[in-house]
Every structure is written in C-alpha cells, then in structure tokens.
Length: 201
Image (cartoon, rainbow, N blue to C red; front, top):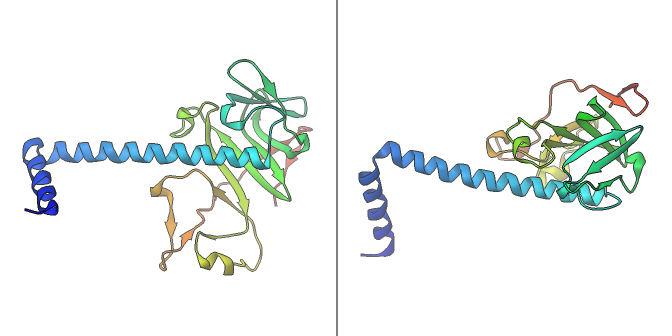
C-alpha cells in the first residue's frame, strides 16, 4: 500500500469517526487559522510599507498603539507612553473624525494619498494594537500582480483606492484571471489640518 492510499484511508477513517459535520467544522477551524495568519502577515507588511514611506522620528508603525492629532501634527503613541511624530510632518494632510480619536488619517507622498482606517470593532481592527482595520492606497491601476498590469494605462488616469489588507473572499478577478482592484465606491470626507474640507480629486 503506497503513501497516497494510506492518506486516503486515514481521511476516510477521520470522516467515519468524527462524522461529516464535525469533520467540516474542524476543516473550517483550520482555514480560519490560516486566514488569520495571512491577515497578520498582510498587516505587518503594510506597516513596514508605512515605515518606509512615512517613517516616524522614533520607533516603528508596527508598535504604535494610537494615533492622535496635536494641533496640526500627527503623533504616534506607544504602549510605554513614548510618542513620536513623522520624520516629514507635512506628509500628514487630513483626517476624519475627532483629532483625539480619528476614524482615519490621510498621509500624502509624491502626489498620492494613503488612508489609515481605524475601527477597534472591525474584523481586522479588533486584533490590531492601534485598531487599524484597513490601509488604503490611492492608485491609478486597476489590475495587479500580472503582466497585464504593465499595460493598464487607465486612459483617463483616474485614481481609485486599493486595500492593502484584504481577505481572499474580497479579491476580484476578471475572466482572464487577473486580480482587479476592488475600488471603494463610498464617498470619502476628510478635514485638513486647519479644519477645512479636504478634497481628494
């Protein structure tokens, strides 16, 4: 009896001993664990991106427990009470919500915006030290991760929002199997550092 036959026999015995319903529950539990691991990795990678593009004067975005706006400056607070601003303070351009507890903050680099969205009750935010539920990038691309992306000129160069932190069931593919950007179709409203409306074209 070869290894493949042994594995099939083992799986069959598992089904018979556990019952199909219990077996499915066990499989779903395993998948959930794998998905959670993947989301943790995505969050870590996304915060590494923040460290590269929007570095703090001290520390890492990985370890920040909260973000607040003090006058016109973004401050990142750490669990031990330390705080830090951005190396380049003017990269912080807008927010939504209250300065002491923003629902999102908007950073800008090279003409493109990045939004950190906070929701401590969200599916991702509830597990993140800073309550980050999503990090969205402003982009002109609609196709990612394939050769087709290089030819995606998007003739009108309109910008859309791309989520860096997404689960497998949020991915959208076209008929050719290309990964599409899942555009955020809700209207976004922000306030700038002076308390005025901040428009993102």
